[in-house]
Image (cartoon, one colour):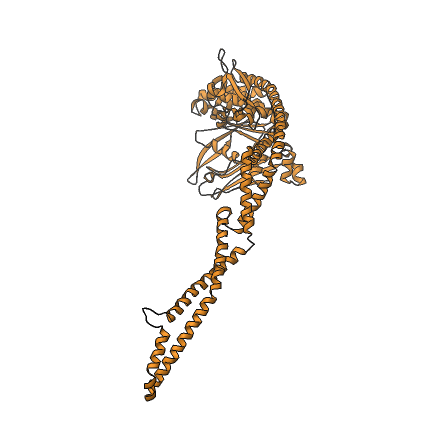
Length: 571
């Protein structure tokens, strides 16, 4: 059972420490006082995703903590093992679930003080605590939810069969994908095989070694510079040796100039020096031209190597454009292509083998689906009768309720749905003479509330969840129906804890314990408080629910009568 609940800085709740007891506990209060905040805090323990908006203004974090006794026995062995509890903790059978949310929306979940994942907290909370909010009435209209309700009622009777169906469905989905990958069309398989062979031959014939591309790129940069030097050297040699429009080359002109001064040089020391310099320049120019020409010819080999390197890099660019940007990516493509080619070459025999396996599994799936249908039909009769009985107890004396099961047609998307080949519908006729129609089409708010309560009451007995919380299960009902709902809640609370948010005096009066939610000012801040009411306070709250005035004398007398009748039921 839930023994203690602590809430700190959660929305408008500054501090709440509540010790709870067995039986029916009702929660009432003015509209907007914060009843939903109380339920929201418990929802966070059940695994609701974190929202930083729940942190009270001015606080750094919100904390919700609940302590359960006799809790470990309710967990599946594998789930209990994942908690790695000590021998002392196992003997005490206590579990403390807590959830902290900070201002940034970051959430921390703990069980017995140890940090756990949100998914593990959710799994542990599920068999301990069930919250039934108003939106579940709408969800109950969904055929998928109706199917889940029927399977939850079946419990372990259907679990292994449903698991086997899911395995068979998974095998089919994976098998059909593999058939598609193999190529269900032989011509397509042939086309893919030829393409892969061409691609692999192109990669293999290129025969690039690890690191070769990097080496080639570096060599190409060096050779590109050599090519530019060769062009400049040969151009310079050509200028020194060139003859334009009948004019002699530079070295010839220099030699001729030196020869012209030969006679004059004998008469002048200065001219002799100039004549010698011109002669030397002519000879040097000829030598330079020869050296430049020889150097240019020697660089031709570099140019040829550059062409080889460039051609090799062109091959690389073509590979890169088709198969990957790097040596690693192309190598990965090659490995996958080789595996794919091997699969395709063996594809024909695998195709035939896999198709045979799928046909065998389909026969097994048909048998499994038929077994699911058989189990569900029997359970549908049981559950329909139990819900009908419960609804008659909830002031629907003429109600007819049935769970209809129809086969899903072959070829439709739902034929291989996750939950079998049954189309399940909740049908109801609330009054005599009406036709049975889907729940969503005819149920009023009050009727759907009672259907939900009936289902939750029945499932609670089969699932054994010790703590049930109902958020305004009395929505849309009044008068005698409200009293019937109250009695049903009280009956449901035998041997467990039931918390119910209610605004109906007929329900509130039947509670074993009464919590009152209200707002008050604390240091100029509004906060939500939750008080445990004594008997006198309960009568005043009942008077408020009846007339809107807690001190109305007639309402107080009626409240006293309601409480007296409730106590007689407890005897």
